[in-house]
Amino acid sequence: MLIKKPADIRPSEITPPEWYARRREFLKGAAVLGAAALLPPVLRGNLARAADDDLKPTPYKDVTSYNNFYEFGPSKTDPAENAGSLKTSPWSVTVEGHCEKPGQYALEDFLAPHPPEERIYRLRCVEAWSMVVPWLGIPLGQILPRFQPTASAKYVEFTTLLDPAQMPGQRTQLLDWPYVEGLRMDEAMHPLTLLATGLYGKELPNQNGAPLRLVTPWKYGFKSIKSIVKIRFTEQQPRTTWASEGPSEYGFYANVNPAVDHPRWSQKKERRVGDFFRRDTLLFNGYAEQVAGLYAGMDLRKDF
Ligand code: MTE
Image 1 (spheres, helix red, strand yellow):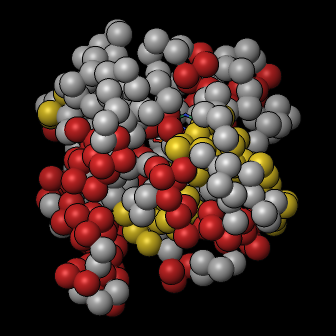
Image 2 (cartoon, protein in one colour):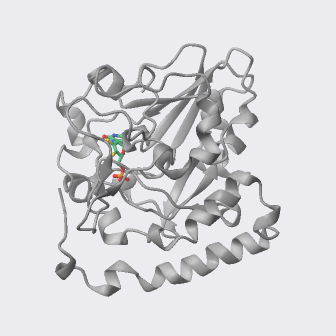
């Protein structure tokens, strides 16, 4: 795990100049949207977090060199070293299952109704190490209705590319390939859930899941499936990779929850990459106001 001592961190790494430019853009973008007061509450809350100095973005260098992407090897430095072999163009996304408009879409067509200027910035942290990342993407809830999910669509399942020729990790038994993740329909439609196409205002680097990856800001990092080639509407809860590998350790919901310990470690504290000290982990990663209602009546110790 890459933990830097404060003395190792140059001030320019902590607050990169491009971030200040981006941050101005982000805030200006919000102003263009019609001032924060006019935003739906969920985006307003997000904006509040974005303006919070406690959410200083993790330096680009760390976001793109300390990764989990087992298709390119199990160590945190493997993806940046090996993911160059992934060919992200041409790319297509297959939509199937309980919907009226299934099909195979070239990535350009899949994204076409959402031109780059409409893609939004959003910050969030991820576990197991935590990071603050200025993502660029499209709310998934704006994309899914185009395929007209039917009343039987209770969940959305996502699948990563399966191609051992390009992904050396898939030539091993490290995981049961391909990587699969899933969300309940209301989680998928929540305005905080993004299909990310970039970070720091640039295209997604391969190691971060190019050309298309999921970002669910209130969940642990393993939910954030990378390099997605398939989206399937299902009636049953999808069998997700980590919940299958270790059902007692990784639940389907994966909500950030300091009150529920992982069987092998406490989840009360987290260390942000680049920080020296650990900080308190926030319920739902600080987005409780926006997402707690999704889980009303559920026992989050059981549905962890
Ligand atoms: N997606 C695929 N296809 N393969 C993976 O191994 N790892 C997950 C998730 N998405 C993974 C994946 C895990 S465990 C984490 S913590 C995040 O990606 C890490 O995202 P990052 O490298 O962009 O920080």
